[in-house]
Image (cartoon, rainbow, N blue to C red; front, side):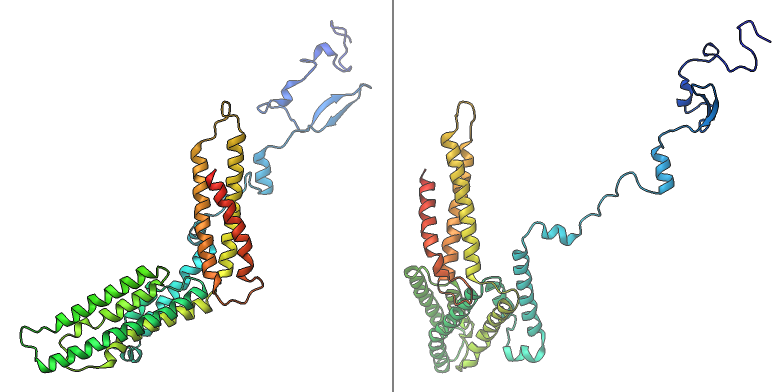
Length: 353
């Protein structure tokens, strides 16, 4: 039986009986219709079931596969990594060498039998480690050890006659209120300081450790102005801990990460080449740029020149250390002389521009 619209009950619905050509309800997430299976009609008029293709949500992926949407943040760096990021490995090794030498000196002075042999002031070994630290090259450390020994011996040669004179004076004039032996000690001390100052002024390259140990040798026994006996062991009790500290520094410098002046000279040459190349590049840009359109600050050029001067000072210092150092290496420090001369001339010309 046909209806008024001209369609039977058994016939499929026509296009006008549908809600629209595009059924947008399948994209509505709140729709009550079943989206996994819906009816569709092909060109032959046959009805079949078809599953709906829909992109899975991020929540479903995370819930089914347990894969996080974003990778977890990296763990914070440790305190050691934060510390090493500010310093190079070479600087850290030097600090460790100093700490090892200091604790070795403290350990030896805390042993009762060793402390008794060192005399009344074994702590001077720690003071020697602080002043003559092992964080330097092997050649420089050996040079300091030799000059310390020479300075201590010269100080002893100067101060021991003074102590003999004071002991003789105190025996003939027993200390009774107005003792004048301290005047002999003071005069001897000031004359010794004057001689050391003259020597340092005349020979400016004299090692500082020589001066320090000479002063220690002269000043050490000034408190003995009341003694009536001359004892050579008094000076040995002072110089012994100091030389022990120097021996510990030499041992640590050779055993723990030994450095040679040749390596330092290579690093100084590298730094000098880099700074001179940067200054040459900057000077070329400064002279060739059109200053009306591009302005290059003069402070940048002055900063580059200061870096070149600093690198030049390091190069001279490293070459002076490596010149007389006895090392076993592939490259002789004298082979760098020609490179150093050429580089120094180039830096002088760049600095004068």
